[in-house]
Length: 260
Ligand code: 48H
Image 1 (cartoon, rainbow, N blue to C red):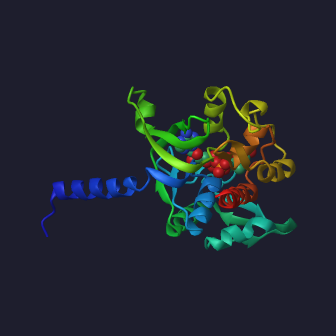
Image 2: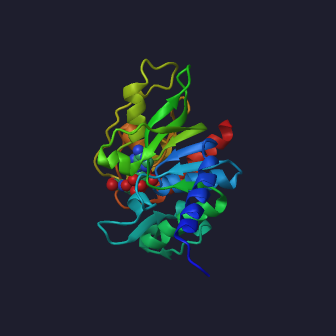
Image 3: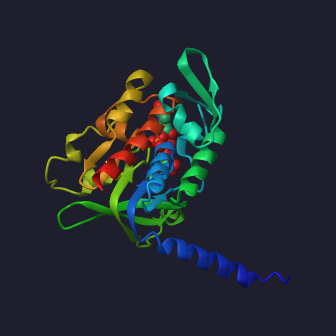
């Protein structure tokens, strides 16, 4: 077999274009491929929805890779361990009703199971803004290559349309903050300007419950999931326990499916 450099280039470009062509108009668009975004993508895709997930970094997994302080182990509670098992992730039962898992196994298998369910994941793409309808409903994302963003180049972005959008960008709650800053005046009862947008110091007991309670639609068309939900509502962080993130991802998928 003759190895042809141009043939390789064509394969990569054509396959990417074909995939991306299916991402222009989707049911659900998710920003951020941490645990909450991956779980949301998986269960939405499993329910037959066309889901696209954009991740700024080359690596998928967000804050889960590092476990706690770079010890690559995560801890979850009993009520969320099934979400790990559902993705084929092994757990060890620990004292006090906790379960531990290998962080690397957790990230790679969550990612694999989202892809297997049919979600389309794009890395190295940053969501830099939202698309708004005339009635001020979020109905898509404005995206650019992360490398353009990092280099500070003045390159105009592209847009994708989605029936529902999810901010799963973690602690910075980037998309919610953009909407809070840019989408004024707000209409109707869903107003990001009512919210604190600053997470509070660590208390796992409060933070873990709050992250699930706070997972909801926060602006017409835009849902907050994972650590972003606690940042929006000014709730506590919880350290390296990930059950709440998984349950939040599942909850946002269920809310969107109910509102479809
Ligand atoms: C595209 C973006 C953008 C953007 C950011 O931080 P994450 O892991 O988020 P969650 O909420 O799924 O999980 C939170 C958890 O990892 C955590 O931090 C915990 C439990 N902390 C507790 C504590 O006390 O510290 O993932 C978010 C992902 C990352 O991969 C970012 O790179 C990505 O979103 N991202 N992607 N466009 N604008 N902003």
